[in-house]
Amino acid sequence: MGYFSGPGFLWQIGLPEERAFLWDPKAGTTAPLPGLGNLPDFTYAEGINNRRQIVGSSIPRGGFFTSAVLWENRQVTDLNTLIGPYNGWFLSTADAINDKGEITGFGVFVDAANPFGPFLYHAYLLVPTH
Figure 1 (spheres, helix red, strand yellow):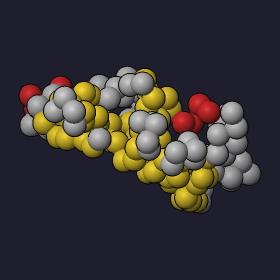
Figure 2 (spheres, rainbow, N blue to C red; figure 1 turned 180 degrees about the horizontal axis):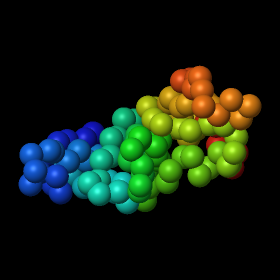
Figure 3 (cartoon, rainbow, N blue to C red; figure 1 turned 90 degrees about the horizontal axis):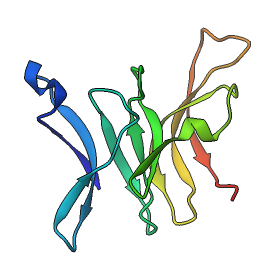
Figure 4 (cartoon, helix red, strand yellow; figure 1 turned 60 degrees about the horizontal axis):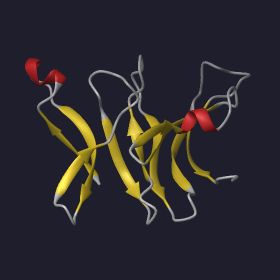
């Protein structure tokens, strides 16, 4: 698990594409992990547990900032879709996951009473409810 820079969509104009991958040590192969659909596809894998759940970040479609993501069975989920809308949080990175599925990372909290700032950058802990 990790990410690399190399030839991709932007390579033609001199910019590398960065892509997360999963390495299979038994087969000696790597498999790219999908992003949230933006081109170029920038994804970053940061943590993995014994259940092969992987966390990291991806630039979402139409976005400029990374969103925290979870990969399970090579399917990507934006963690922001799991915390409910309009709660003030935007999860930008996921850095670690344990075998219980608890995820830590960093996000931005925006106070609804003052939506233009200041924006508070905080660590978070997500705990599965199922």
